[in-house]
Image (cartoon, rainbow, N blue to C red; front, side, top):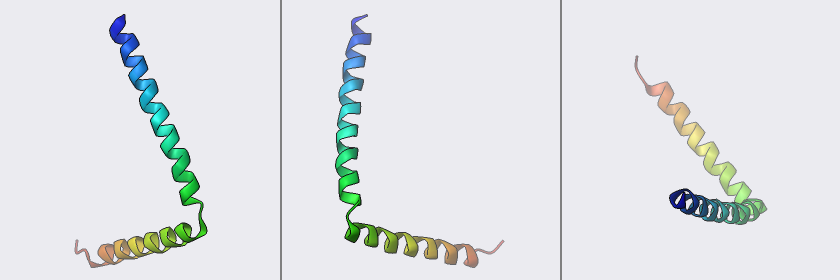
Length: 58
Protein backbone atom coordinates (compact mmCIF):
# COMPACT_ATOMS: atom_id res chain seq x y z
CA UNK A 1 0.00 0.00 0.00
CA UNK A 2 2.77 2.39 0.95
CA UNK A 3 4.75 1.63 -2.19
CA UNK A 4 1.69 2.42 -4.29
CA UNK A 5 1.29 5.77 -2.55
CA UNK A 6 4.99 6.58 -3.02
CA UNK A 7 4.77 5.66 -6.68
CA UNK A 8 1.70 7.88 -7.07
CA UNK A 9 3.46 10.85 -5.46
CA UNK A 10 6.54 10.38 -7.63
CA UNK A 11 4.41 10.09 -10.79
CA UNK A 12 2.43 13.20 -9.88
CA UNK A 13 5.61 15.19 -9.30
CA UNK A 14 7.18 13.99 -12.53
CA UNK A 15 4.10 14.74 -14.63
CA UNK A 16 3.74 18.16 -13.00
CA UNK A 17 7.33 18.97 -13.95
CA UNK A 18 6.73 17.83 -17.52
CA UNK A 19 3.59 20.00 -17.73
CA UNK A 20 5.44 23.09 -16.50
CA UNK A 21 8.33 22.55 -18.91
CA UNK A 22 5.92 21.96 -21.80
CA UNK A 23 4.08 25.21 -21.05
CA UNK A 24 7.36 27.12 -21.08
CA UNK A 25 8.44 25.42 -24.31
CA UNK A 26 5.19 26.42 -26.02
CA UNK A 27 5.78 30.03 -25.08
CA UNK A 28 9.28 29.85 -26.52
CA UNK A 29 8.32 28.00 -29.71
CA UNK A 30 5.56 30.47 -30.59
CA UNK A 31 8.07 33.27 -31.13
CA UNK A 32 8.27 34.21 -34.83
CA UNK A 33 12.08 34.00 -35.02
CA UNK A 34 12.13 30.53 -33.47
CA UNK A 35 9.44 29.40 -35.92
CA UNK A 36 11.50 30.61 -38.86
CA UNK A 37 14.60 28.80 -37.62
CA UNK A 38 12.64 25.58 -37.03
CA UNK A 39 11.16 25.79 -40.52
CA UNK A 40 14.59 26.21 -42.09
CA UNK A 41 16.14 23.40 -40.08
CA UNK A 42 13.30 20.98 -40.80
CA UNK A 43 13.45 21.86 -44.50
CA UNK A 44 17.18 21.15 -44.57
CA UNK A 45 16.69 17.83 -42.77
CA UNK A 46 13.93 16.76 -45.17
CA UNK A 47 16.03 17.76 -48.17
CA UNK A 48 19.00 15.79 -46.82
CA UNK A 49 16.79 12.76 -46.26
CA UNK A 50 15.51 13.06 -49.82
CA UNK A 51 19.04 13.14 -51.18
CA UNK A 52 19.91 10.12 -49.03
CA UNK A 53 16.95 8.21 -50.44
CA UNK A 54 17.93 9.11 -54.00
CA UNK A 55 21.49 7.90 -53.50
CA UNK A 56 20.59 4.52 -52.00
CA UNK A 57 21.19 1.65 -54.34
CA UNK A 58 18.90 -1.35 -54.11
